[in-house]
Amino acid sequence: MKKKKKQNRKHIGRTLTKGLLLCVLVGVGAWFFCRVVSHGTPPETPTGEHLLTVLTYNTGRMGEFKKADRNAVIRNIVDINADIVCLQEVEVYKDKNYLTLHELKKALGEYPYTYFDFKIYNKRRQYGLAVFSRYPLIHKTTIQYASVGNISDYCDVVVGKDTIRLFNNHLESNRLTATDLPDSLSRDGIVSSAQRINNKMEKALPTRKAQALTIRQAITESPYPALVVGDFNSLPTSWVYATIRGRDLQDAFLKTSWLRLGNTYTTHHLGVRIDYVLTSKNLTPLCTEVLHLRGSDHYPLLSTISW
Image (cartoon, rainbow, N blue to C red; front, side, top):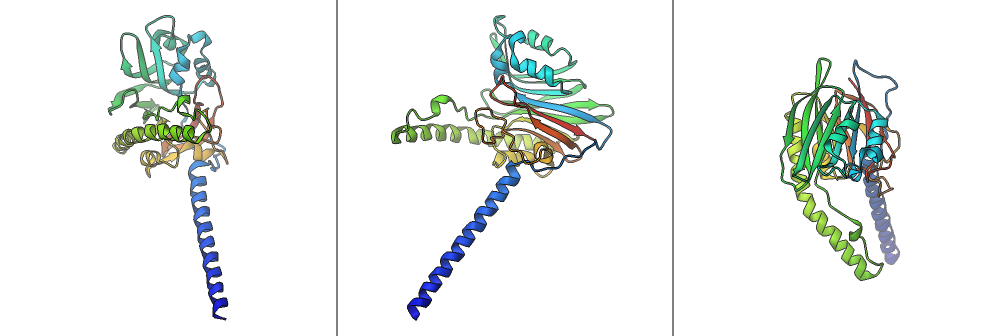
């Protein structure tokens, strides 16, 4: 009889443990779903006086700096025709065999207002961020932090009598390449690959965390509603994303696109979203789409905002 009671207690204990584990897994799954999968319900009509379309696009070194007449990235930007275009990895050359700054400006000549902020600027090439806008851009400011090629900045967009502070970001990359993948499926090949990837991630993360803190402070100090876009090189479940978003910003994609994962990095097809449009809560995202266009290793993200 004692043995049977003991077995019953063990059975109850195992059942409770499994139940607790299931609850934890369900909880983690629900948290992940809410943070990663868009499940919003967009308004059918604008809620305010102004309507603004914003494009953020990591251009993959400006479409591998191909000339404008055969550059898929430039063609995508022209076809999308957003009010404001925020670009990362803008790369142009002095050598006329490649895309030049003059050619880029000419190709996007429909935008009267521009802001170029180059992290790399030498006799051969320029590399950094750019904003093209149909609305005036004032108070253009670089957000300084230590990085070889990554950069953030902000400028104020004047729309009618209103002003919005626009933050354009390209945060520290893990710099993973095809050579980081396993050379073979052998144990040694997989271990070696894992070590290479881990080393790169450990090296990049502290830099990206410091950048996130700097950006968050700039957002907090903004006297105007904030529109924060760009390539964070971080997942929606990351500390970096949570820090930048804070409690005062909303994720435009999560707000407006029903049950979509929204992968923005083209080499991952399981919902890797590392490019974002975040807005202050007094701006209303109406629609946000990941546009599956070729030309870069990122897909452009287009958001329509009302206030």
